[in-house]
Image: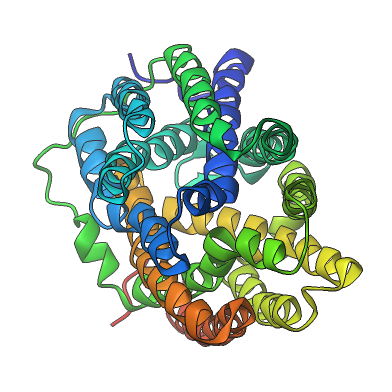
Length: 402
């Protein structure tokens, strides 16, 4: 039965918190240490960059397919459980063979399944914690923060475990965390919305063609493109500078700790500026952050300060994006709106960032990747500024600009 229109129960919010915790624990483990495991298998930096880009490649098609199914059936919880179960089955393939082609195929299958988790769960959560088109950012942040906590615990704990057990234990850790995610998904309440009907309302692609929406997604694309340098190459960069695996985990943890603080208290802060202003601010801070990492990566205290800006460049940016998507893609469009955010923000940008970053690092070293990330963030700031201007000229960003 559909979720009630009033405030969601504590049990429902706890269940979504558990899913967020388990999924981002898995994401933290895979994003941080998969490149090191791939390296232990003898793959080149360029080959590792190609493997890292596979996750983004699946985001070009998989999230929208999952979102379309969720919107057209209304069965968000059931589809989420199916996606996680298929991911758990896929990861068993990591134990079969270390051959590059096989590992690439397994990685592709794994990411195709896990790509459905975020758009489905975020759409279901947004449905629960919204009043009409307005997202309750405080309540959303108190759920989403558990994803960040899971990420930080997984990064630190996995770093210690891999330091002691060896990087060959990586697939076992992935299997364990996906098992926990399945358990969490099975405990979710059944959240359904009316399935897609034939009413004459704008489709998701029609909304996407609105200038404010198009420039918003352009800003998301370049902001995430800049952050691809972190997700694909920061661990390799730090190891090349002489940091231990445990130190790499701690440096990642600094950024996520700042993210946790932001999500917990964002209800007090996000309403002080419009989402578009926050997006512009996040892009501007990203310019400085990646330039500092490129220039001073070997200086621990400077690197720590740069990582603290993750509160703005990721956490504030992400929550602002969710709020904007909730306004642009309400009701039956919510799943596809979340999917477009993944496809356009984390799909094409990740493919380009992974491949281009691999080529740049091979030719000029890892610092060049972060200088390029700073340049991408400059373009993101220009796109966000354009979206802000259109919003101020045409009013509500949910209205088409003509």
